[in-house]
View 1 (tube, rainbow, N blue to C red):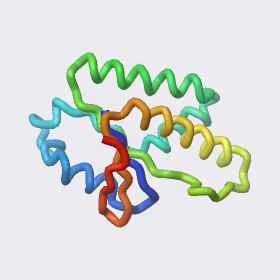
View 2: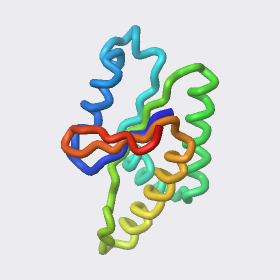
View 3: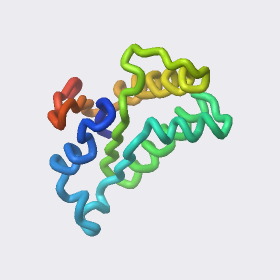
Length: 125
């Protein structure tokens, strides 16, 4: 599993596609699973009433399922907050849970890349 993180509008998806051009081909992309916008996945789960542990378990299951199928899992997420504390309670919870889940994923990932201005910097791997 690889994790790609960065701020909003930093060309994360384009960067990943440049690393893995086979994502553009239906036939070649069968060996990959791309999860783009993990931060929005987390927000949806929180809005539906799930807690951090339930969301983490759901993500773990996705990782296990993809590895069992022999697929390379690529996860892209915005870094939200960057030290700024949102005014709304729900936004603060979202920032907190997303940050903690990204820390868990970074530990599991083979490689973690941070993308800024479309330029990737490998921070793990």
